[in-house]
Structures are given as structure tokens and as C-alpha cells.
Length: 304
Image 1 (spheres, rainbow, N blue to C red):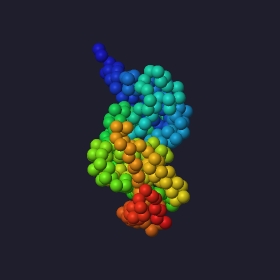
Image 2 (image 1 turned 180 degrees about the vertical axis):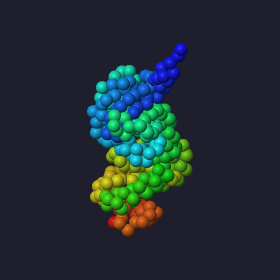
Image 3 (image 1 turned 180 degrees about the horizontal axis):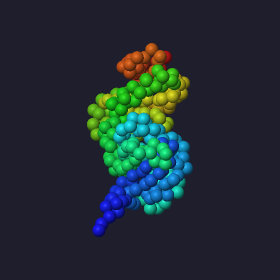
Image 4 (image 1 turned 90 degrees about the horizontal axis):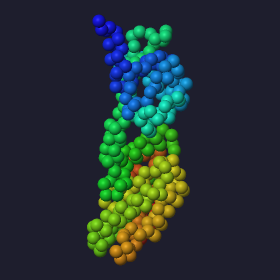
């Protein structure tokens, strides 16, 4: 006669996703399922170890925090997180997926204590493909199709966050608006395809020289914007001026075209303590850009 307990254990061990029992102190009490080595590593050795025995402290802190929140709320919680096999001490990384894996964790309190501790059951589902698709779609929604730079929407979102950060921490944030000089003349003389090449060339040139954390966006038409977090006015001035000079000395059309000198006018300003909305910042930078155009173009005007 078939033993129903054996059937139940076989069913649990055959679960496609790994199911962990984790105690309130962060100890692995049990692990079942997750046998598919295309999607998961073998974590059987984790049982009886603490999160802090096998994970970097920052990651262990995060997992322990999720356990405690779940126990406090006493309800199912769903979290997403990235974890690579190399992050977990003792895993055989040859028998499992490479690189960082993205998981959806379904964390549910257990009614019965485990080893005299409150505990949760944590089901980890591999959502790497979904995460990659979402990241790709997010990038597409934030990217200008022609130039590959960020688009106006992304810039406005980033500027909104920068304003909030400035009001909280008072770290300097610089904003630059840049307009390609006489762009209509370029289109009229060389055609719109050549004009597109100029815009692409400027964007690729600018993005290649950005620092980590800087953001370059196509603001609209032949106008671009540069957001420089944690950047004092004198440093922002140097960065913008260097870019302006690089554009003036660059060659943005194929050799089949006649030589073309491309220049840009720029306006620069910092976020100010009195700024309550990003429209105020953009208006001030736009005024500086307008003054640059009225000063003969191919120059940088700094507001404040």
C-alpha cells in the first residue's frame, strides 16, 4: 500500500522552485525542491548555516530584514532580488546558471516554531528572463530612438529626483542645456539624413566622455541636456566647456560629405535652495542658453 507521507515528500522534493525554511535569526532550517540545474544551484549544504555564514553582510542584512518584516506583518510578502551563485559560499557554480539570477521571493510566516524560533517559508522563483525583458522595455521607454541618448522623459524624472535629493542633502547639482547652432542650415544644406548623423554623432561623442552618474539626454529637436549630480559650479563649467570645444573640433559627417563645422551654444546653472519645481530650474538654464545664442553662439553662459 502506498505511503501517503512518502508521496507528499516526493511531491515536495519535485517542486521546480527551491523552498527554504528560514528562522527569525537567519538560519536555514530546511530546503526542498529546486532540482532544475538550468535555473537553480544546489543549495542543500545551506541547511543549519546562518545567512551570515554564507552571504556577504549587506545581502544577509537584507534577507534578515525581509524575514523580520514578514513575521511582524504576519502575512504573505513578495520581494524581488538579485543573487549570483558566486555570492553564496560553498555553492558549486559549475552546476547551475551563470551570472546574477533575479528571483521573486514569496515569503510566508509559519504558524509553528522551528527550533524554538519563529520562521518563514521562502519560495524563490527564477524570474531572470522577465527581469531582463522589463529592464529592456524600461530602457527603451527612456531612450531617444535616433541618438541613443536618454529622452526628455528620463531627464525630467532624473531632475525631479535630483531636486528632492538636493533639498535633503544640499549636494550641488548642475544642469546644462545645449542647442546645436544653425541646425536648420545643416538640414537645408546637407539634408535631413545628414542632420540626423550630426545629432547621433554629438550624442555618442558626449556619452563617451560622461562620468559615472552623469546623464545626457536629447531634450527635443537639436537640443540636448546634461545633468551633473554632485558637481560644483566650477567643475560643471569645465565639463561643459570641454564638451563645447570637442563638438566644435569634431567631424560628425561621413567623408563623402563636404567639411562641416558644427558648434553648440550652452547654458549652465546649479539647482538653487529657492527652487521649488524643476520648471524653475529649466527656465533659468534656458535663459542662460538664450543669452549664449545672443552672444554670438558657440559659447557657454553660466547663470549664477
